[in-house]
Length: 205
Ligand SMILES: [Zn+2]
Image 1 (cartoon, helix red, strand yellow):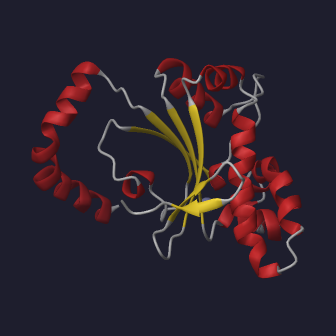
Image 2 (cartoon, protein in one colour):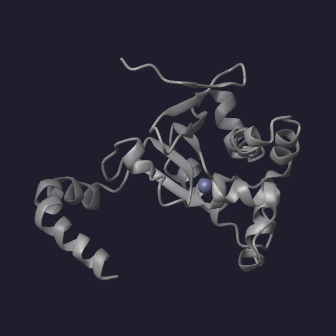
Image 3 (cartoon, helix red, strand yellow):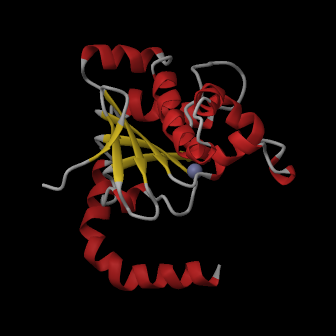
């Protein structure tokens, strides 16, 4: 905690004066982010850092392995679905991005089984991505399965996004665009899912 408070002090001294106007305007006018991202809780994969955005620009929901569960308006507690409803229906974001990443612990769990200490929730949560696991296991090279599964998880999340009626309807109308991406921690490279189902790097302009 000391390190966090030290960080906060640095922010107040250096970051706050610089960004004061931005925060004041956001407080007065409210937030109006044009994009939303579904990312992993992994501490190495911070969407604000990767996409270099300022406060107010990107609505973010993070969970284990950047998963979107299927649409299920029942009595269970749906944190990710609630965030999606807020971003899509209330804030009306125009772009919705699923951000997968390399060395994902959640995906590792999906492929290898949940460690005992993560048995209460992680295993059940990761079962959302079972179709991704099945597809990844078809990969003959065992060492390629993790990466393959990380990409397939992004595709599962994108497919599940379309089970939300108010997302499917907005996508059909062309007012909401869905995007799949994958980030390599080691190289900082960002791959974007193309129409042919492959992830490719974006060219530097
Ligand atoms: Zn992850």
